[in-house]
Length: 378
Image (cartoon, rainbow, N blue to C red; front, side):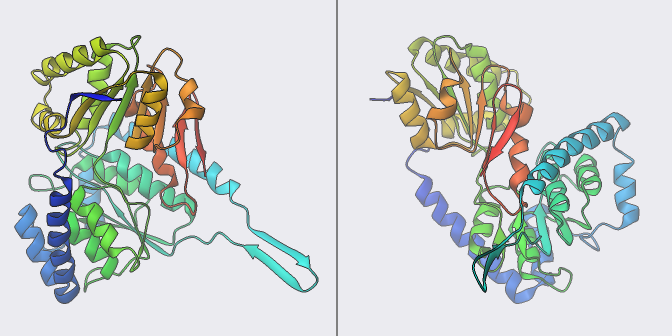
C-alpha cells in the first residue's frame, strides 16, 4: 500500500476551490457577453491595472518591443520555432484525406480542414512564456489556420518583449496585451474590438482553464489544461538533488502547480525533501515554488515497481519523469500521462513544450521522449 511521506497541505480542499473558481469565471464571462468592450476594459483595469488606449498592438508597437530583445534571444526563438515547425509539418503530412467507394455508388471518406480562426492564449507571469507562443501559434500556422489572434497579459505595466517577439515571429495576425478570463472570453464571444474565433488554444491558470471549459461548445478548445504538474518516479539509483531540482523546476510555474515524487526508496524520499528545503533557501523563485511545494507537493513511498506504476497511472500526471535503473521498462507499462521523460538526461524543462505541437493540428495524441527522439502517437 503506498504511504505518504509528505502530503499536500491543501489535499481534499480542491473541490471548494474549484467551486469558487467556477462562480467567479461565470460572472466574468456573463459580463463580457453583456457589455463587450466596456466589460473587458473594466476587468483589465480591476485585475491587471492595465488600461491602454487599445489592447491590440500596432505594427509600430510590435517592432519597438521586438527591438528590445537581445539578438541572441531572437536567434534562440527562431531556432526553437523551426524545430517545432519541422515536426508539426511531419505531423501534418501524416494526415491523409481518404475517399473510397466500398460499394458501387457509395462513397465514404474524411478530410482534414484547418480551423478558420484561432485564439491563442499565451500566459504571462514573472518570466516570459515564449514556449507557450511557440506551441500554439507556430502549430496553428503549420496547420493552415486562416487567422490567428493571440493574447498575453501585461506584466508590471506592459508585456514581456520576448513573448511579443515569439508571438510575432510565430505568425500571429493580431497581438493583444490582455490577460485572464476577460481575454479568453473576448476572443470566444467577440466584442466591438474582437472578432470571435472558432477555437481557443493555449495554457493558463485555473481561471483561464475554467473559462475554456465553460466556453467549450461555443468554440472548440485544444484541451482542458490546469496548472502544470510533474510526477518524478525514482528508485534507489536516483540522485536526490536531481529529483529536487526537477520537482521545483515545475513547481515554480505557479503556486498551484503540483510536484510529486513517487519512489521505492525511503532514503531517497527523505533526502529529496531535505534537498528541496535547501534549494528553497537559494532559488529566486522560492516565493512561488515554496508555496506550490507546501500546498501541492507530495512524496509517496511504494513497496514495488508494480505499485509505483499503478500509482502513477492513478495520478495521471501531465509530465512524468522516470529516474530509475531501467527507465525504458516504463515506456510500455505506463498508460496515463501527458508527456513521458525517460532517464536522467530528459529533464522536463528540456523538452516538455514539444507536446504542444498537437494543440491546433486536427488530431490528438501523447508526446514522449525516449532518450534522443521525440515521437507522438494518436
